[in-house]
Amino acid sequence: MKIIFMGTPEFSLHVLKKLIDDGHEIVSIYTKQNQPSGRGRKLAQNPIKNFGINQNIPVIQPANFKSDRDIKNLKSWDAEVAVIAAYGIILPKNILDSFKFGCLNLHPSVLPKYRGPSPVASAIMNNDSETGVSIMLLDEGMDSGPILSQEKTKILPNETTGELTNRLFIQGSILMSNTLNKWINGKITPESQIHQNASFTKLFSKKDGEINWNLSAQTIVSKIRALDPWPGSYTYLDQKLLKIISVSFEKQSNLDIGEIYLDHNINIGTKTGKIIVHKLQLEGRKPLNASDFIRGNSSLNGKILGVR
Image 1: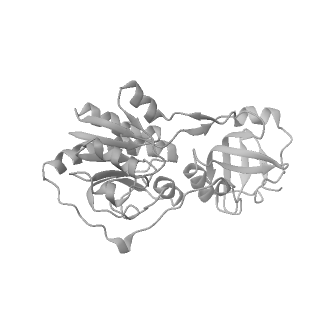
Image 2: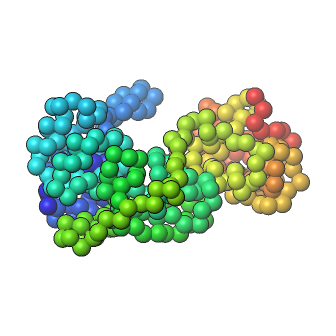
Image 3: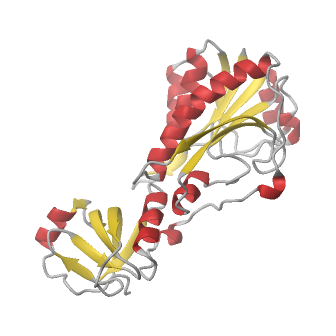
């Protein structure tokens, strides 16, 4: 089958590689434009583009699909279906309608729950015990198209958004493969979502990463896991930004809110319980394990985090 693949982040490669392994013809790859990266802010090619170039597959990077030229170019590939996995660009109706078998999209939640840009982070932040993947036909709405297939999976203890997202796209690549085969052979009837049950997620920003020590320890840990790798979690120590990278928690504590206590661990008081920090990074320094951090900062007992 002639397929146009659309995806941008590295975890989308799971889906692309599975399609190739299944023997489909990827006539072109669509991915977002190169983004500034590193201290020099130079434009960097994303992993999807690099893979396409290495496989001699044409790679197209339109800013959007507002120009007639971009629309005409996409239709010229004469693909029968588009497969989308975290592309990041909205497709207009004239694109959606241009494929014989439509546009199949992998969404990392059990729709209609967690529509929008941050379904995995939202599931972790809300302490959900499970999530899943959905294969849907794209329509003009926000993740509102009819469902072709779904699978659920447990969220593992201490799993971060980065880890869970990668696992969901591995699972989703297999589900996409099976669903595509059944769909083109007329063995699936699309099922409309129950729109009144829909919930929506937001795009997180850097300011969302600041830790509020007045929350419970469990809530803070869930937020740190949810915001890893983006935008990350941080607080302030002596007016310097302190990134909190890896943590666990205990439900009992006699520490004040935001108070540091050093023993063989870095303990931080919260409204309910305490955070135990395993890895962190002080502004201008490299990331350190807790034991290494303690050796260079043994006089922190009693200091309060979050004060600027």
